[in-house]
Image (tube, rainbow over all chains, first blue to last red; front, side, top):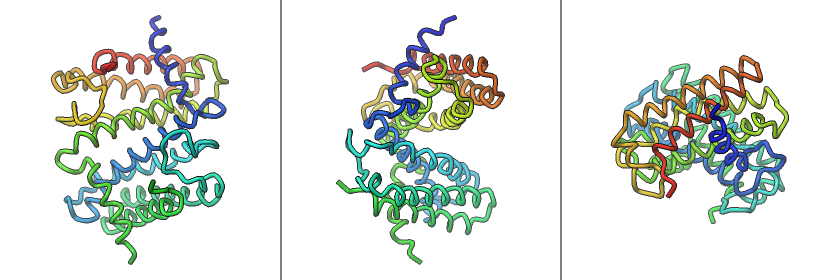
Amino acid sequence: MRIAAPLAMAACLVATSPALAAPKAEDAIRYRQSVYTVIGWNFGTLADMAKDKQPFDAGEFTLRADRIADLAPQLLEGFPPGSDTGAKTGAKATIWTDRAGFEAKMQDFVDAARALSQAAHGGDEATMKERFKATAGTCKACHDQYRSRN
Amino acid sequence: MRIAAPLAMAACLVATSPALAAPKAEDAIRYRQSVYTVIGWNFGTLADMAKDKQPFDAGEFTLRADRIADLAPQLLEGFPPGSDTGAKTGAKATIWTDRAGFEAKMQDFVDAARALSQAAHGGDEATMKERFKATAGTCKACHDQYRSRN
């Protein structure tokens, strides 16, 4: 069975995996930045619709909202101990010294994203736009406190 | 209502959104590379378990498999026309000149990832490991043909 090559390739991925007791800081940093990038890509469509820069499309809005709701809970594991340094990062050290505060802000985002997705499935455009703004507010609240602009 | 700041922040994201008729090549490149990074991060746990480098944990395997199954369909929109250049990318030009071939390979990955997730929910460890290897094979098949090593 030709499994050697795929397993060899998979082996290359092990180093970046969270399965190890403590992922390398640079891998965690790259991972979390990637999740934020994917969230931002999806967020842009919602922002366009909320500001009437593109026609409102309930199906597209729902697709993007669902993706963000699924991605939000994937962020926290990207902030393991020791990953305040190791590569270029906007994460402030307070993420680890004020862990409870950071995790509360993260949970606000997870909750808002889920509510946004639920509103999308509910189908009411006004509610969807309101929940979008609320979600954007949770991004800003966490960034204001835990992300540096360096 | 304090919406100005969140909307201003959301405006920063519009440039990276797929909502515009043609996303900027550098944004598409960064987006797709990010999706691959998140897939790779999740794949590492599965590889560890498939190779008995960490104890098999059905719940963890299922979590990672589900994430990969959700992420795989998010890749294709990261390869819009014109994004063969614009930033450092491993994407070969044949992705666009042989689009049907590329999309077939991408679909193989999407299908394998879904089958992997289904196997995880089915709960049989041997099947889960088999489907993992099959999925890794679809990664390799696409990379061998459409990714350059430069």
